[in-house]
Length: 289
Ligand code: AMP
Ligand code: MG
Image 1 (spheres, rainbow, N blue to C red):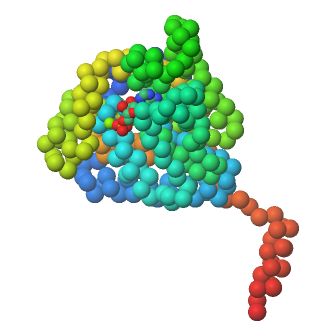
Image 2 (cartoon, rainbow, N blue to C red):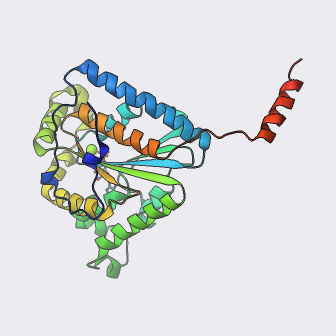
Image 3 (cartoon, helix red, strand yellow):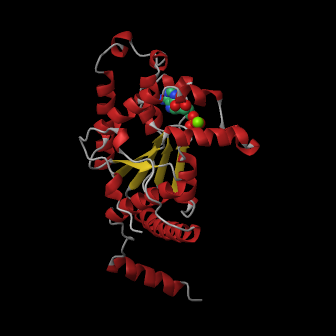
């Protein structure tokens, strides 16, 4: 089954209504074998493209994952990236900011962790939390130690969207491409996954009391996501809304988008100049005894 990345892309300036975006599509594959074969194909291609990105050593790719709890961010990252060379890949999970991080502007902690040239960087949560969880919880904003007149500004969120899109344009102009995923899970499926985390002792560690508190704010989170996705999806740093109720479909869609993006980068192994070739041949000659 062919996957068209564009079906899931948020067009720049589009007003997002999450109700209109599927959390579940017709299964991409009828059998486990077919699913696995398709994912393996993506993984092989990803490994080949990553190896060119690494050899070229000029550009980087940043993948950003955002979602409600239990949408499958961790497992999507694990499955999609399992075939790539760990040397060329950097994953960061952003949690509640530390005191040091709160002493800086909200982009600071992320900019320190951007992928180096030649690498794929993965943000499991990101600076987008600062227009999502922080927007949903005014007390978190209040604790960000900003001057009061800045916190009270009505356009604080528009200002943050602008900071984000400016950063992302800047990165594009400097060789870092960005792809952003919102794993779109339904409230019913989140309930099923939470119940599994409670019922299965091996999954208990994944459940925390705060997960329920955030679930109660579902509508507010969705409002914040809708505004954020609409305001920050751009040509160079698009958002993809990935149906996440079936994890396997989500993984295939995510890996397809990543492969397509890397392919579009037209990555090439560095070529040798005739002069360099002559130098190498003379070195080879010296190695012959
Ligand atoms: P988890 O990813 O489930 O381990 O949880 C990490 C928690 O950190 C989530 O509840 C996030 O909302 C929270 N978090 C991440 N970034 C921020 C931020 N900038 N401000 C406040 N909370 C954050
Ligand atoms: Mg969590």
